[in-house]
Length: 238
Ligand code: HPA
Image (tube, rainbow, N blue to C red; front, side, top):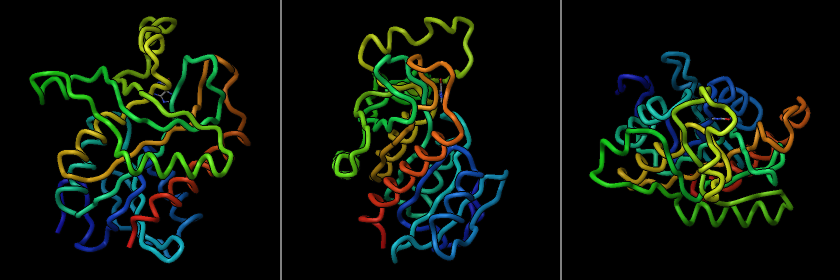
């Protein structure tokens, strides 16, 4: 069994998966948070591992950057490998002055500048998170006293733009809380296969602090997000 982009054998991928954009982050999570991690994919350097977290099987795999890349992997994971619960963990930018670096954002819905959904639907599809996953993650974050915001995120097709100062102003004026590049595709594809999906992002660049994150801030906020994601996906794992 193999797909064009994943070379895992049947049964090697768990029903629940964490999806960071960076494949090396998948390796980091597997080696530091999972017991007995086993590599199931390295096609195109997209590393994927399955291991044990608190007694249950969980997988973690990189997705690459952008909606075309994540939709290839999520389509193959859900259509061929039986993945039923997917949790993207990523970083995002924010032009909301109240958003602090390291804050965890939970994407309730994803607006997008991508044309993918405009080609797929003859109207505007609104990709939303799985409500139960969102509710569980929100309550768990609150319990831990973590700074968390829930709302609409913008999944953009561009990281660099010709007009950096006002490129996202409209979106933030209408309540968007962060901008990243994959969420809308994850939510749309998951619905197609009747799977559950949720995206958590830490704010890695914000107008409130143009200096950006220190390495310590990055490490701490990443660890908080990984443990929150693992602890909440764990409830669905086998
Ligand atoms: N734009 C898009 N994706 C991102 C950003 C951004 O500013 N920061 C982190 N991921």
